[in-house]
Amino acid sequence: MAIEDVPDATVQEDGDLVVRTVAASMCGSDLYLFNGEVEALVAPGHTTLGHEICGEVVEVGRGVGRFRVGDRVTFPYSVSCGRCVSCRAGQTAHCLTTGKAIYGFGTAFGDLGGSHAEYVRVPRADDHLEAVPEEFADDVVPFLSCNLPAAVIAVGAADIGPADSVAMVGCGPTGLLALDLVRRRTAGTVFAFDPVASRREAAEKLGAVAVDPGDQSAVAAVVEQTDGVGVHRVVEFAGRGAGFDLAIALARPGGKVSGGGVYLEPDHPTSLYDLYFKNLTLELNGFANAKVAQWEAMRLVRAGVIDPTAVLTHRVRLDDLPEAAVRFAEREPGFLKMLITP
Ligand SMILES: [Zn+2]
Ligand SMILES: [Zn+2]
Image (cartoon, rainbow, N blue to C red; front, side):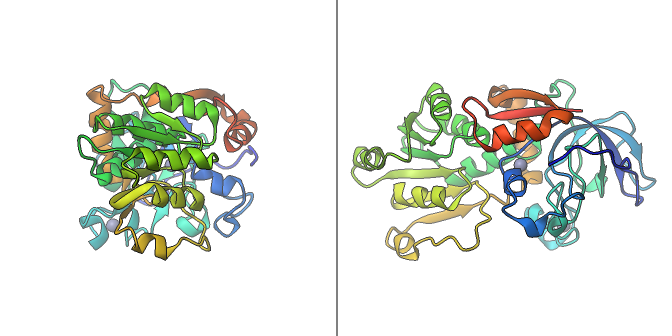
């Protein structure tokens, strides 16, 4: 990753507009690209990362009707048309018109610019861009692009009963937001798994029983404590094959695993045998239909149900992003979410 001067984003089609980045953030899913794990997606020296943003409209194409220069906006991480068969079914991440176009996610996903830049071109603005309520501070807004909608979707899909035991696998920024929502849904015990001690501490503050997934006896103890068969529901935000396998291991027969993490490991061997012999229900929504959940995310923030800035631990300038990204990638103790300003 490097910071370079590039030509400013411009309106290219009538439905485009350009936003000035007021604030952005870096997502756990960006780490796949940052770490070079999905080389085929990224064109080095060309791809700008970032799909989480608070922006101000600075230029508007002739075909745009809903926005004017000066509007404060955010986008869901992917561009959707709102009219194709996928969008009409609420599967906006699978928009057929835009072909799964994701901001800052490389050539394989629409080759769009990212929010880790001073200006971003927004295609099809009327179809997917969202105006931001005035009362939302700039540092809240980037959470509406990805993390908070993802948490809303995963926790909703987990279908948690009022006395269910729940395991939260992965307590990064989005995992902790999801955990906060989980705690409001059940009076049952909520276990929180993360290998990083500071993240386990953050989970404990939210009322969870924290467990180090590297401690096999502790994992077995959780199964023992939940009627000897495992938890009713698992919400997964580790976003790795190992986290997914842990989620499967923790769920009781007939239970439900709701995966919100991003899995980009095509060859990871998950045991079909383990899945089959547990009668599990799987809900995988890591490729989240963020457009659809964005309004609910806004409603939760406005109602004071959740304050996403609780997981905001660092603020960096764009010039310092390459160095800060390393600390984020290494899961430095106490490092959760960073706000990036130009
Ligand atoms: Zn994201
Ligand atoms: Zn569509």
